[in-house]
Image (cartoon, rainbow, N blue to C red; front, side, top):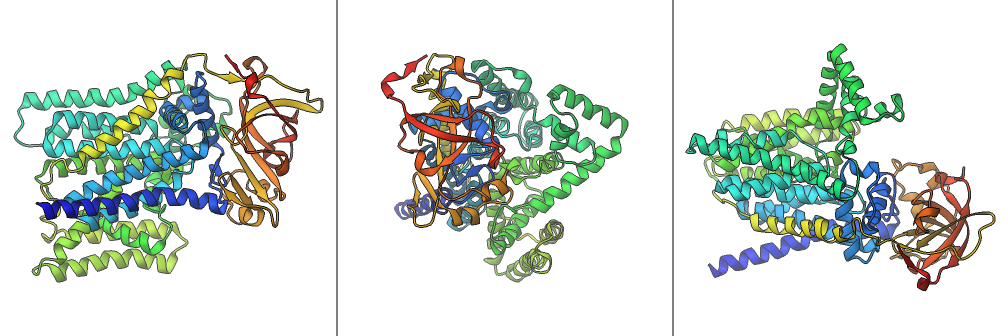
Length: 612
């Protein structure tokens, strides 16, 4: 027993190190290289949707409501506000804390895999999940909260099914429902989970229906939590989860992106978009079928494509297919049935949500993919270590691997080749299940990993529901008076380098830094993601330019816009976390990024702060 505990401790330490490194190293990689994410300039400045959620989080800390944009998914604004509270309102430190939470989510899934199949299988899980976290940890986007809660909810739901623990199962379903509301995704998982009591043996009819009712209530409670947060912030429930309207319209017109709804109906409400979508479905239902088919094809083409290294993606894809195929065999275990229902819910959701056009939509259920790859690894190991099945397993496993590898060798640039290879490879893996090579691949390890998952969920609850809420509805906003006139423009006031982050593009021979981020111009241009909005404008930025996300702290009566992007000479903009009045051009510039131009900067005495 002592040797076993020692091995578990060493394995857990290894997993913790790898998981946290997998979540944090990419963040610092962005800052050291000045690399730009489509939602984070130089890995720090919030951009596009990330800017809106960051602004909403600051509004929560100031005791104000959420904008209509953030009311669609309110939980993340509160989560980010809690992280900012812990970080003293410093965005860079808050992003590090967010990365640690993402690393903890990776760790709990890996630990659950280790308890079932060993340390090697746990490392497979990390290899699947770490690249996904690397895409989101550096941004202020809802995917981060969905990722953490989705992992915790999945493990608690699975563990509750394995143990037949009503308490654990209901808590897990509630957390999973909250995760899918925090970052909308594979919603059809939820109705499939609640029918689990009718698929298990040795349970009385009365108990089945009672458990079914409890699970339905927990699913509804997950939706209700978001509504309560909106009400607490003084918002309107009309925007809650309104993102689905444009998605439905895109499906109804035959599989177009969700943006087509806004281009055809500029300024339309979510209700008007829903009405237009239902009209199309009634009059031309065949277009909806085409849209669903298009969504399914896009799902297959994007499976695991967030993993940037092709050889690794091929190997992990083969393991993932083996895990899927293992679930297709009749399984007498309660946990296996629950896992199968969750996977089925993800698959049935794929034609609907894949039309969004991004793998980020799977944030709340990507933990399942990591678990499936670990299961596939266990399937192959179980077969190879058996003398009776070793050759059979090696041949079929090689067949799955070669199917995926050939698609990347012959037509790596065509996503359809990857999607087709996943289908063919899945069929090969399914044929392999005719043999009993995975008979012991799902071991009796009831509830393994449930306590760490519960601990992570409780930490998230503390960050989201306790830390920011005392500020909501209170007069906590700190404002500063204008200290000098700005005849050529208008004054704005911000805490530069604190909640108004600054990125500087340095010229040749100038100092570089990763905290605060000061990037060399050539590296900044080379590391720009072409998918970034205003890419051409960002590339054209001259050396020695500062880009500022300014959160205005003038008194409320003087505000027209709470936050915005400013650009100006780098030497003019300090990053010492002090309070400054910035005189900016009165009109939005036609120059890069439609940003306002910085004309002058003036220090504001902190003693002049006026709590509202």
